[in-house]
Image (cartoon, rainbow, N blue to C red; front, side, top):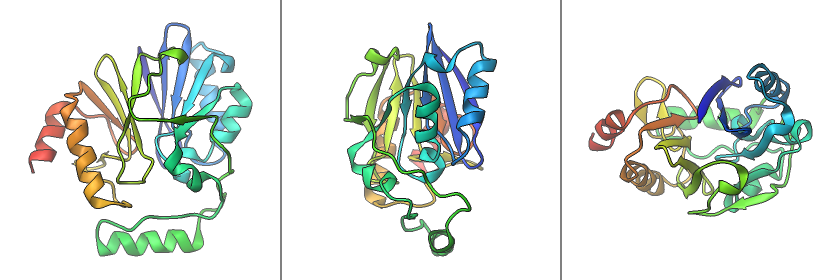
Amino acid sequence: MQVHTLFTLAANTFIVASANSIVVIDAGMPNQAGRIVKRIRALGYAPRDVRLILITHGHIDHAGSAAALKRLTGAPIAMHTADIPLVATANLKVPPGRTPAIDAVGRLIAKFGFVVPLETFEPDICLEDGQSLKGFGANARVLHTPGHTAGSVTIGFDNGALFVGDALLNLIRVSFPLVWEDADAARASARKIRGLKPRAIYTGHGRAFDAQALDDFVVR
């Protein structure tokens, strides 16, 4: 399994290649589908090799190009049911911030939005906790890790690689998400992720980090 990271304006998109298939984890901001496909071709694959488009949660910086990427690849979109309302409307919804300052910025973003709105879509596959992804060529399972959003998921591969979306960030150091719908659930999800004893944690924002960095954060 090879992990290729592409920064799609505001968040990380991951192209996970194994054998002759690809799974794309998160689709970035709107108008990024062409860049993702260009990277896939540069890696020696064709768009049709994409077996699944996994969305870790329904925010615009992770789901913004999902519909367009589906058109270019023919791959189905998968996400948790609880976040479907977030992608069913172009109206931007920003959860409360972790601090008053972050909350104020979030309210401004919600009020003025982005230049390009989210292209709405309905997922083809509704993910559930514990669901296997082997049918799509990925030796991985879905872990429901709510908090940042109600439908946030982590994708855990058999080799110990975890893709946590915004359940955890690593901008300066490992931290909770800047905004969250449920603070208690976010903390519980961090403990749940730690309990998996991962080899590598890939976050939607920042660099990948290891289990020791996660332990240091959770202990703090």
